[in-house]
Length: 358
Ligand SMILES: *Cc1c(COP(=O)(O)O)cnc(C)c1O
Image (cartoon, rainbow, N blue to C red):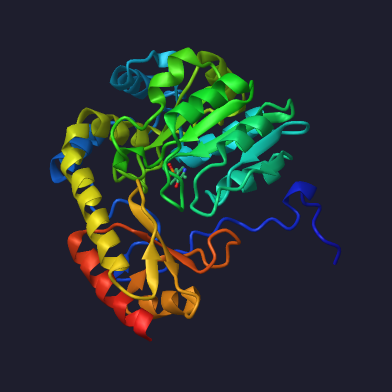
């Protein structure tokens, strides 16, 4: 039988695989391992009780846009919602990539960016990070100011390294290029206060800041993310988006979460405190080194004497699921560990110590 007439752009493309396996301690996907607080869940359920299921949702989710615009001191026209940050990443590739427009990517980083580029026929220009995962700022700025780049993606804090991008660098980059600069701040709630660049949106029409409800706000299962940007970028994105991608149930849940956002502060603070416990616990062991992180996960380098893949398997056999990055050229022999509850972190540290010993 002859092969199906698939789009040549997807030839050889590997589907995104979160490598999700059931385990007792799930610390592989950077989720908030603590679910939404009980009082927020109760408010959500009350709001859902009389939600019309027979009507299409508001396509642009204007109530949410207004609530978020208010939170950020911006206007409705500066906000666009998506079915998770992931949908917005794809739409950005559609709107600012394509034939003749390159993506400037700064690996090691989120693999979804490159996949989206391939799907949309966008060339990828990689400007790799240095050995300590810092950004080669001058190289990024020099390359971004060449005319072929339509989209630059800077992830801050970066996934999987946990590294922040400097605000002064982002500002220099915005001034040096007419490319759209996406600063992916999916993990920003866990970072040092004042590190976000969201306040730069009014002054730079080519800045896009991505935020999500999936990490700090414990809604990975709900699918809700948004961009803060200029009305000009929002207008391009409304051309490519699926009209009803943000469903009524998710809109109602996210609105309740925005209205109760202070309820998440204690959990976020605990995650930050536990990140320090995990960092010290790992670095006290011989055979592994955790890199400093501003996110809710740590990238951990396993000493060359032992295969990270073997350590991953031993952890999994002990009921602990982490993410294996060891085959990545720039994350060789590394595992990524999400910060869990104090109990989960203790189980991990003990299983990890055993796994390193063999
Ligand atoms: C998790 C994540 C996102 C968004 O995830 P959604 O669940 O689709 O909102 C975006 N960027 C990075 C780097 C992430 O790790």
